[in-house]
Length: 149
Image (tube, rainbow, N blue to C red; front, side, top):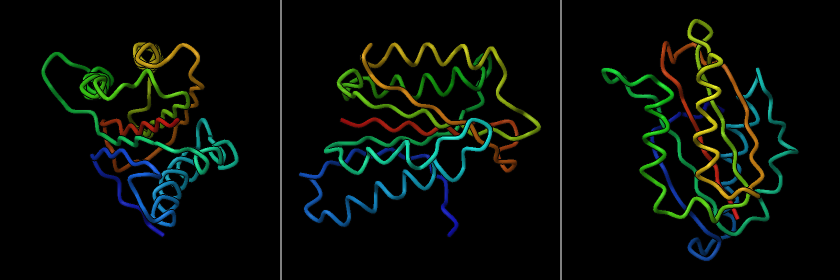
């Protein structure tokens, strides 16, 4: 089954979605994307099983944006910082999933920039990350953030 990547965010909770099957379908979508597409630094489905027991989850998927003077990882960080008001520090489980093309892989300096993202979460948060390849991205980064509690 082909899943389309999108530049969207949503927050859903078991209480807000009356149908538990619909909630499970949203979790299935997140687990499928991250576990199936992470090749370089794999995140196995078993590591993500905890999501099925969570009560609240945020999923944010975005592409890096080209701007003069702003590198691609900085553009990702800027976009995520816009969501700090949703209380990112309250989430105890976090997944960073990053995709790049083979021609424009993630470089060490970009990996070190991820440290800036980790301080947006609780110091006790369990942070997992996966890295995959998608050659349709050209020089962009596709970043998926999943937060749950």
